[in-house]
Image 1: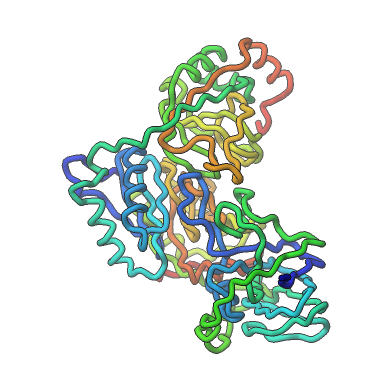
Image 2: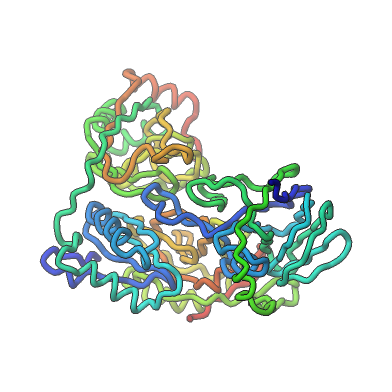
Length: 239
Length: 294
């Protein structure tokens, strides 16, 4: 239930989330990013961090503030005349990041079958789009990328894998993403990249930041051979 | 000038450095982290006159065995048993560890205790913090035998006065007949009640839960009968906080700890308070849990 009708910023819902946080409903990730930036920049004594998503901004508050007071201050900024929740929200100029992918993922054949496409058509559609890095989440360097071809939209796997390899390029619902490190995961694996998505020693530490645009480039041209090899290798792990 | 060091003789099952955590890192996908029981870690720092930002050690079960290269002032908070050499020392107050002496710290009647050394544990920070994030694999590595931990100079003497009298451990556990804990976790209502079954809140409060085998700094999973009715639709991923009680499709709730994922997509059915997180930190598999509205 989204409360952010553009003509009615007052309707934006602020929800207490435990003792030291608020959730602010927003219509989309772009406005969430903009509102998160403003909250952190303009309320440094109150807001210690903001976590944007496609539906909300989680506002982490410095401990010790009375919730009601914090709510009033944040509400004032959210509903103020310059509120980005209701208006356009340009990201600072983002980079375009190209990510080379070997499309030989364990789920590529299954995704193709469920979408009524050939594996090569799945790859063609996945590489045809320029995605927008919507928000970071799950783990460091994991960025939800918006702009997936509607034909590739599938729900998450019923049986999440306990181990998804680092560099896996995957899709779930209307997002695509790269797994920065080996972790559990329920997304459909299309392929793998060698690009390091996160390096704590680098500045900035993440290869892709929210607001950037991302393109995937296939490095293996014979997708069908890769799919056959993956099937032969019994790559349907976890099935 | 050389400051003292603590040499790790035996790290026990898992000993981590923790501090106030990472602020303003959400845009890189990095969660705040920090001590499982922030109050206990803060108390340990205050007892030795440390700056609040100094790093402490979070000891899971123990025994952790350290050797001081130079005399050090130490405090341990939480349900701990502590020895210097063969002599037991009191918890929740500062004590001296002579040069060359061995310090042994175990958890008793709980799972985790916090150790502060005057000056702080001065391992190199990662992304602005000395906290280990076990989910992200970020921050100083867990302690290993042979490690030498530098002691810093994060002293703030006025803090010692503010620490006041040693307090009894705030957590009053009611130990059941089996020797396992039975704790009440204060819980606040969920942020999106309208997305949940009308009975979800009452069911959460009514059930007696048991801590499952999967319990760590990421999440404490619970078992119980009957499982709660899982919502039909999965929610959109959005930000999480430590203490969020999440209901996956299994109908068995889990409570997120300090190393929670930055975002999560299953419905949140309640939020445990900071004091409740301190209780959560002490739970071991088999312990009993009830949620009480705060």
